[in-house]
Image 1: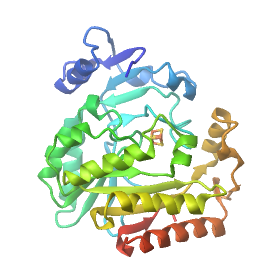
Image 2: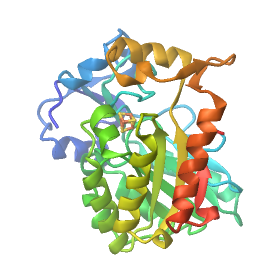
Image 3: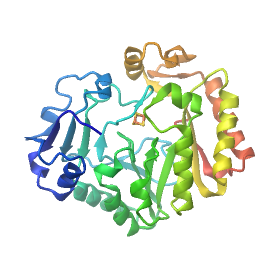
Length: 334
Ligand code: SF4
């Protein structure tokens, strides 16, 4: 991964986690020290599509709220869900990605103050001593895409090993499982793969791992004993969506026994109105802008209810027919 310029915040420049990242990207002698990353990152709007060839990297200290409550229906019901932020932005380029327009810049920020983030996770775990509690990484990035350089997985692995009733979910569209393969499997550290039919991956998920590779990566982790899960989200309508999803479910169950998949989430594509404008600007020829979408009174752009429910219920019943049990399946944002 070649970054055009690398900026390091003075306060974390000497930290081992920061130096480890610089070493991994061979940049120990080519970074610039800055006071605060947000004096630069997003200060002047940088077009989203500059992520293709003009990406800068910031190594910084995450300040403010380090652990946040996750939105409704973010994960399996019946337990509290939180997310923590160890990075901003992503090296992949999915046309529906909500990160376009979220920040003023597509540059990558890696936060290296994992000690403070860990302390905050532990503080939350102590608030639920006898109850399952979930933490999600990757709300503003892909959890595995840069894991071989970002270096946090080993630390969070050690942390979650001490708290078996707490769960960590790593969400990804990559097949970059190298770091995880080097760690012993933990029952409470779950890697979830977002899956779409290959036609959809090809059309919308630029630079991500092909479906075949995501399936292989999931199979490999599962065979090593790591818990895995699946997100069928966002499901994007196409004239062949039903047969495409039937084939996808078939490929999944051909690869792995449904009993070995912790959960499957299902969700249809949806956007805040402002974000849909960014998609239209960035990808004016995308099939996404010609979808049967409506804008709701609360400024969400999504399919009409009958289509949403038809898709969700059809895919749910495909999963059940293929051997998944009802408690393994949850629907997102409905
Ligand atoms: S993998 Fe996720 S975070 Fe990365 S571009 Fe795609 S949707 Fe966005």
